[in-house]
Image (cartoon, rainbow, N blue to C red; front, side, top):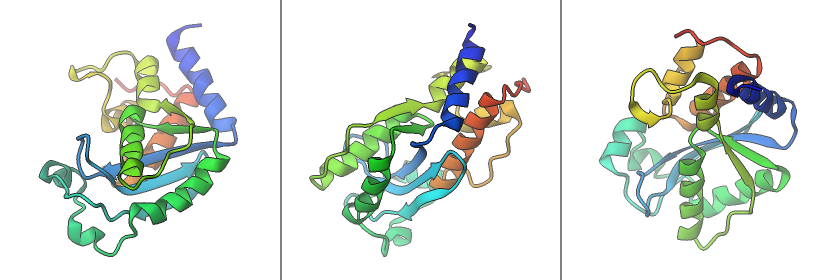
Length: 190
């Protein structure tokens, strides 16, 4: 079985399985002390299970602010992570797999945020739609981001619109649509 068919089979299994959630985060930055400031979790049908801002206990890096536009003023009245974590834990207790676009990053930031508050993330399986898309599409046409496609580029290659980029709910929905397109064997546009 070639890489594209193998990835298509993976995506079909994701789309037809219960217990799979699609997650995306926006964060204060990319460093080892940064935290989640926005979180969205969807099921594979696109139902929003959780969508929330999160008030961090650390400052927002100016580079991250330029990406997502979420300032400390936006987050002033948002719940802190322990409150959000209680809701997230209920979802995770029913999940068997978490799919994200760039799973190593999202998982690390969720774990870091938990550690900041003395909380422990349950032991769950995570899968990376970014890596799966690289298998489906081959290397990116430019070497702009190592061997992986940015989410916006992956969506373009499949002809999927992406309004609201760099907000957690929009990016989680984009990831879900990307997985569904791979499941359908949608051809690449370029």
